[in-house]
Image (spheres, helix red, strand yellow):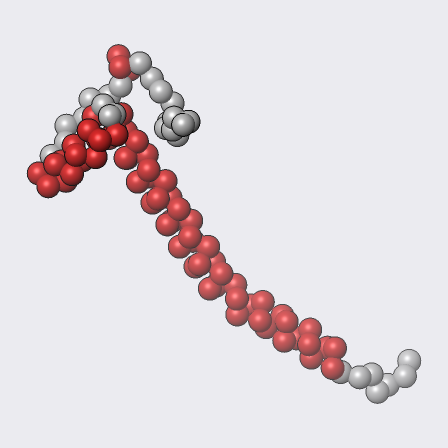
Length: 96
């Protein structure tokens, strides 16, 4: 079974930045239960969890941006398609 590698660069512990967290006790208990079952140390688990959450948030932001841009441009493209269809239906009555 291939071991998952985090999307972030692995650095030595001396270069890691300490962070103080205030976690909800329920969240902490659930995290510890999952972490123990996966047999991953706490720091690595939290780094992976934050990385996964960041990927999810970036995905949502890109998805929202695409939906917004699609909403903005759709009426414009509909107008162009309508104009082109009208041009296709017009028959030339004048001879050059």
